[in-house]
Length: 137
Image 1 (cartoon, one colour):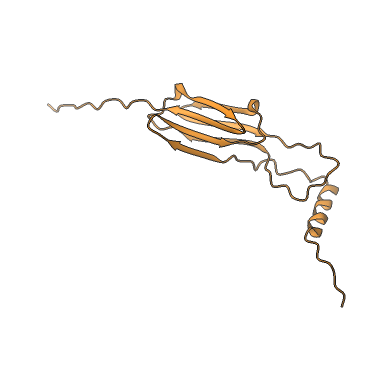
Image 2 (cartoon, rainbow, N blue to C red; image 1 turned 135 degrees about the vertical axis):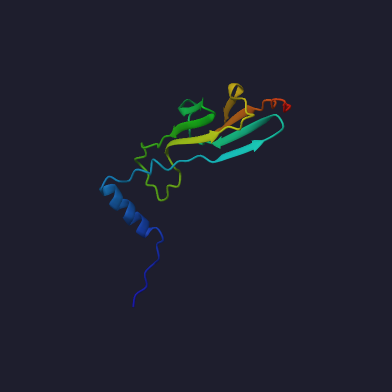
């Protein structure tokens, strides 16, 4: 009986080599979905998206039929030739998130800011229309 030194990365390296021989070593490009936080205060609704590695110009924010759509793309840097990845947990690809706005959100006054990889959307609230009592005749 002989002892073999345990190499936890051996099987992973074999798998990566087999994939690269078949040209399938590209990351899963369709699995990036940014984390979203939503909150509300007295004056506005605030939506933040974590978008590390996403360029400001690659982000779109659209409002149509009371639905807010945020989309973009996080691109994979494919020019790594001198190094081998042993673990690639970052996700890449196109993303799209949709939100139905509450009736009291002012879609005309949305503000968007992008800083340090975080997109912050502020949707001011509009005052609710006054209740009206209707008399029955």
